[in-house]
Length: 142
Image 1 (tube, rainbow, N blue to C red):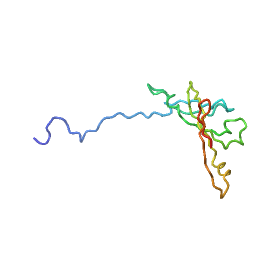
Image 2 (cartoon, rainbow, N blue to C red):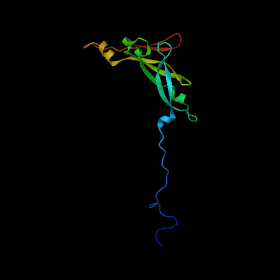
Image 3 (cartoon, rainbow, N blue to C red):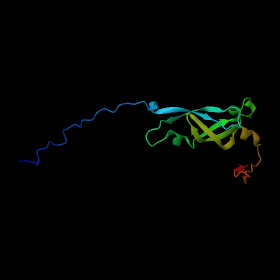
């Protein structure tokens, strides 16, 4: 009697039987939500965003909160083509049904506008100040 101690066949020659994994389109598990700007701006609807559908304890609203969107002032106002160099950051604060409500999160200038403001052979001095308003908001002024 040779090397086998039990009556089981060796695993070397056996192929494991596994079922093929179904190929599922990942977009079937997602849904579209409308993104809205704060009431300060003329245009309310910024666009739409994708989010995974709610499954079990994982809510779609939780994955949306905190997302940051960028939109130029030209996109947010009716006739703001000349103000398109300002880009606002808007963060999702609340989700109501299929609508994501955003709040102001920051602002920056486009690169070409920054370059046109700064003159050649001049030193750029960057400074900022943190200001607290009476309502309790903290503003950083550049």
